[in-house]
Length: 433
Image (cartoon, rainbow, N blue to C red; front, side):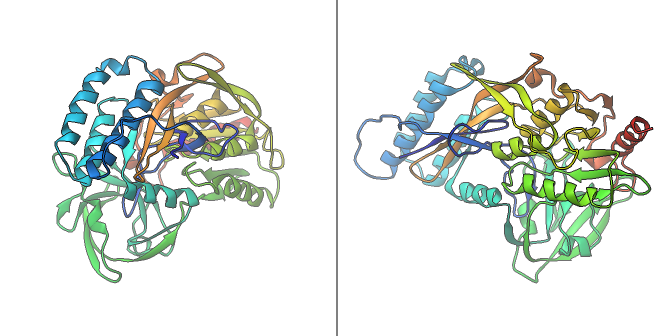
């Protein structure tokens, strides 16, 4: 029996176990970085019995997907789309006979017609990649980077470089741009990525054209290796201060809250902290449990409501502090890649008076996705709820508005010259005087 689960860009866990999906950043090999949430058991959609075979199976999957959107999509007008016409067009295409590859492409195209930037459809292969991300462990052959593509700028940008990886050994750093891979542009004129060329046999070499912000492009040859890693919860005390820094790169990793706790305990071990900077600038969302568990370190109480067509559910956080983390002055960094649960986390700490938010206005992607597992191993994430803070503000419309706005993107500054981090540090130091 199929399961439909909450997934999204922001979601709560019900009494069941589950996930939520988010978009954006990619590892190498390129994989979507989803946001998970709690599952909701449902009865599979009823379909007309057909003889066994590829077309019959495709029609069953298509019908269940279409009906799930019809019944649960957060916007009952389907963003102005004639959903009945969508049914007729795609059913006719499937009945005409198509390969499974073409079918999965068609289902993604169908969901894309909703035009909400959140809902998505994943083939069985993409589902396997998602499951790897949930575990927090990645194993592949590449150069050891975590990147996102900037289609409006025509290149990719490094969000993290894994320790002891070929990329680190070649001198690559977060914020560096990838302009070309193996003689091909990182993104072509149609926005198509060529980052898959970073993959290859262990020990083989790949040529890159990269650029550090403010510097000229340079060519590098990097040897591929087997990478075994997870996204880094980077943590340190800022030099000469009692202010800590923790990067929370994702909520997709079910271990991230525990790793934030461990990082905070380590930061507090030499003595009291005067403040803490939480860097959410590359956090595109993740598991509902990770959101809740991480929020519980810093705040508690009712934080807002998840709203669907039929119901409302409160988001209530129970305090689970590390030392004085519930009272510790906080600054949160946000940026272009902050989405989904990353936005909700940042907005909640700001709205509850727990944190100053510094950085770039976020895009406003706070819809909650429900996860639908289908009989052929494919999966859909359907926007079925949105999040409403206690203030009633519409974050989907406004995004998270920084208290201190420094409208720079991640690719526009270096590790050494980070104006958003400096502004957060300056505020915390003033607050501790």
